[in-house]
Amino acid sequence: MTKSKTTIPFPIGIVTVSDRAYRGEYEDKGGPGIIAALGELLETTWQPITIVIPDEKAMIERVLVDLADHKGCSLILTTGGTGPALRDITPEATEMVCDKMMPGFGELMRTASLQEVPTAILSRQTAGIRGKSLIINLPGKPSAIRTCLDAVFAAVPYCIDLIGGYRLDTNPAFCKAFRPKA
Amino acid sequence: MTKSKTTIPFPIGIVTVSDRAYRGEYEDKGGPGIIAALGELLETTWQPITIVIPDEKAMIERVLVDLADHKGCSLILTTGGTGPALRDITPEATEMVCDKMMPGFGELMRTASLQEVPTAILSRQTAGIRGKSLIINLPGKPSAIRTCLDAVFAAVPYCIDLIGGYRLDTNPAFCKAFRPKA
Amino acid sequence: MTKSKTTIPFPIGIVTVSDRAYRGEYEDKGGPGIIAALGELLETTWQPITIVIPDEKAMIERVLVDLADHKGCSLILTTGGTGPALRDITPEATEMVCDKMMPGFGELMRTASLQEVPTAILSRQTAGIRGKSLIINLPGKPSAIRTCLDAVFAAVPYCIDLIGGYRLDTNPAFCKAFRPKA
Image: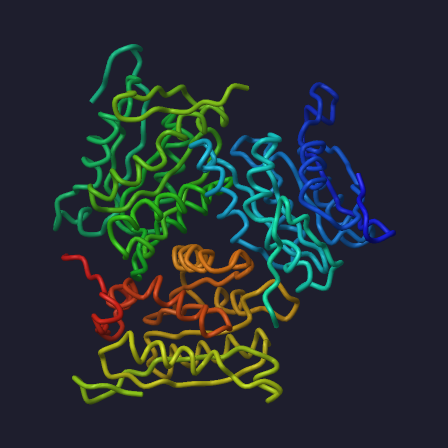
């Protein structure tokens, strides 16, 4: 789960939002998919704080707030709940707890996913900032998760720099983070 | 207007929003443009419920609610009123009646239209879900309508599946609807 | 600053939003960058109304309202304050004073900037209409300003036509404005 270089692993929030996974009717594949992807993308020592919750707006909000405000997660990734179905409410919960929204993330993740399936436009995934935390919604399927992370991850470390979070370094074999010279 | 396979045609709402068309100063070309496009795109038996209304927010809202809640339209397409002009208010009316917004539709329709005219960015068209209905804003011009429908239609049947609406099948000669395996 | 053809120059609002430029800790490069770009893009005689203000939401709003409602600026361009940092608040101030938002501008400007840097998705820049004025957020850096203006400017004159503002003509050597035939 963790890698070399520093000794204190940075916490990264990984939130699976799924009624069925929460009730145990369905094995959570989204959370492990994110962990596997980050294992390649990051060089920094990090540690996942994982949680599986149902598609309940108030619960999603509470978990995001806790990870951002009390658990020191400068990066929080959700999986699931971004579609058009009645219970899909992750983007609304995300927007509710964020100070500002980052529309470029959702746009680019949808554009990247569209190369794979035409139904990518059905994902309402977004991203936003709460305090010193960047929250990004990812889809539910592991393959789509990776497509989306690959599309945006080069901008993630600098974004976290700008909001005063921890310093993430990427593994150049998988992702070349970009930090403009001030 | 209708095609083979089932016997009860599914109602599709087609709403022309235009002060001039409503007053009869201008022949409605948007509504017939949508009907012509759907005639090719759909294999399912369907039936248009057409209405021409002025650019009045409250009236647009009332018509959308009626088509969604009382007329059984799992698909509602509007044409007109998406530009920057003072009277253009269709996206705001759509957002007002929707439970959740689908930003990917507007993004992709603008991207597709940009291949044809640089002024495509002036369209503020969006899409959203109300109950079991998908509402999509289309531009006013028939050629732009077709461009936008061609861009997004492969995702429309699955979207309507996810919200519990009727089952649409497309005509593979014109559109190959995509339904991921559950 | 001005060019041939008409004798009364049209005012264009150019608003630099930057705490450091406002305090004089930093030379404003965004405002001059916009002026240089417009000097090439426009054939119409125009005149900049420039102002440098800090990243204070109420002040940004007041300046935008003044330029739109009292200074006759059918076009207002801001530079700076569109990122994820705590003080970046230009898009929110813009949205607050606008009657309607134009999402296509932000989408296309980010897409164009993404060709240059992966961190383009961190820009939250948007555009909107207030009365007869089009307000567009631009990034802080002159090179990024030019990229963004080049991406959207062909649609700007027609947009201003549609909202009843002044008639801008572009310099075809740098930008071919598009006006669809009514």
